[in-house]
Length: 184
Length: 441
Image (tube, helix red, strand yellow):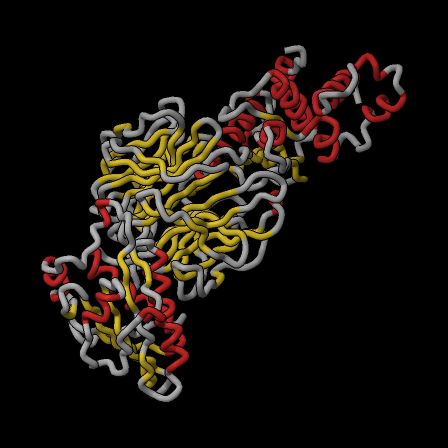
């Protein structure tokens, strides 16, 4: 694993756990440092899920990607282009505070926003599928904004060898490198 | 599936509207808003053959439950009755019924014939006019279907007195829900309008099924299923309950399908590249036509009863609002302008109202408005009310009400379009996405 990727992993983990200490603190905190270390080989879907973060969140009735979401997706794109044998289904979800049909359409919008971002960061379109679950599959069940916020999400579900390798030329190294910038 | 042979032995089709017009006091004008329910006396239904007493009592009770359940009628208690009706043809002593304040009197008799056929005869009397109100009627059906006979008697009484068609002999298809919120299991199920006779139409598997809608003849359902891994519009015949993909040649996902009044055309939402638009096509997949072409979400289409227009929801203004366009997609015009968001519009069977779900200030409402958007009226308010469906006569709405939190779940409720008579429809498990059938034949 190269240094840049490690930094991404740490950044992604710290964004996942909002209460986690700042990345600097990991150097001095053995427990936090252990938490930040990947438990999975980098070339497994579990790595993307646990170390990069498989999901991004959205504001109420929105499908625009926040800065935090873009950071996660940059790392996802990096991982996808590094391991071209994987394909992914991007699930779009909505919270329960909407009507069923609209939330299906909203989930589709969110999944599509993520797919478009990954494609623009070098992942071949053919490796990505989208599906909306609307409000059918919440992860957080309480009736407060914190739970609703967890449920307004997209989840990148990686499956091994689904769609074959990238189309040559679609994943250009140049595009990958140019867009690989977590500071943005 | 069981089928009812409802034999209407004495033709009444032309007889009762005339009777209703000359009815005098025995008349409920629903449009004026009912304050005082009309008192109806229903003496114990007569048993005319050995063994018919039990089913006679059941039919009589269900008839009363149907009528009283509308809150347009109340029953005159049997212990107040003065005249004892001993035979179907016994002369009615009207003063005895006036004395107990009955305005309508229903006399019924039940007999069992060969092969478990049950035959019900009944007469409706206008007590104050001292005459029979419409011709006597007879319904026959297999004994298993006694509930349908009772509903048919109730529909006849209701329609004679209100001048409108009834809604008791009808069914509701819905999504039965079990299991925790994050792993909810959903199955299509069908029940009588009053919650009786629930049957499942799809299996207990990991499929997610959503928003079933009846064909105009009540024998087919359109709905959305995840059987193929993503949401796709499906069609199912109620008799064989075999799900079939409606059409998979367009879009990544298709949902919110609904029949046109002709029963051959369907409208539905098609998702392509993150954008959802409305399409129409024939049920067999031919003649596809895109009706909206807009980067906004356009979904939840519903035809006007004459098939000339479509009401739908769109967030093209920035929030969910209701629009009406022609059946070919022309001239979309926004009709909802109140505060909040409006979705799931459904055109009433009489063509006069649009029912909708409204979200405002964190609450959900079921409401109705005229088709020009005027006279908006909110009928309910709760944490989550959504997805209205019209009774066949356009007087009642059913919808799904969800409760909050970890143990939250859905139930089906009904409410009159006057806003009165809100009640939960009994279902064996959680239930959502109700769709009311047309009146059965």
